[in-house]
Length: 349
Image (cartoon, rainbow, N blue to C red):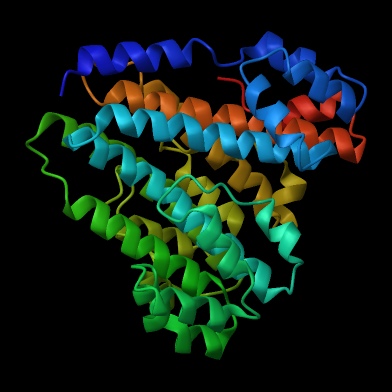
């Protein structure tokens, strides 16, 4: 693979990403219509115009962002076609297949409207819009899993294997964790630590595993699940935190205790969450900090060797962050939040 040529193209795409000043100007727009007008003066112009044919308001922005994200990475995959780099990128994009399946399962478990579920999806992996739409049409969680099995889609295997456990507990963590376990196991299995670019990919995936495991530990503590049962929910292969340490966090049986144990690690920043959030077991605030950490670390990976897969990986996270920020701005604008409140929700890279 000629990484010099590939990364020159990727850096060109990165140069078109919106900076902090551009985002702040979008935040200041008084309503959705003016936000749409402003986006027409950005690299999203083509997608905003195309989305206007079938959608309006915040739904127009959501559609445009999905189309832009998908088109961007289809283009990058085209540049990588037939090379090991294509496998690397598909591994990261597959993360969104997992996220989309989780979103649909969550939606079905609470009987959310189909339109509401679809708006939360980002069809950039192997599961395209047509496939995801058919999944959303299913009446319940089991029907979604059965459809995946009928289509011989790989995600059906871990879901089918763990469905009885889900039925017993009615806890979606059982199915979500099964998907994560399968994804990371398969992704890491295909990587050779002694191959330079494989090692770069492995390091980023290991960071994701650490973050996923901490989120799982927080949920287990909140739900009062002990270490013996917790072990099956934890994923091997993390970068900094091994399973024994994670189980010791669970054994503290309190968020305060777990955060205290994390202070000597690179996750000490979690202690910055408000005392009130910790006392109330509001783990969403902690998850937000973890997501921000993962995004920023993913973006910083792109500052590595300019003749390696590091550059496309960094762009993947930077583009994902931009789309996420724009979704937040449009939704917060609809909700009537103040400019300062919106800025608090964004991740500036």
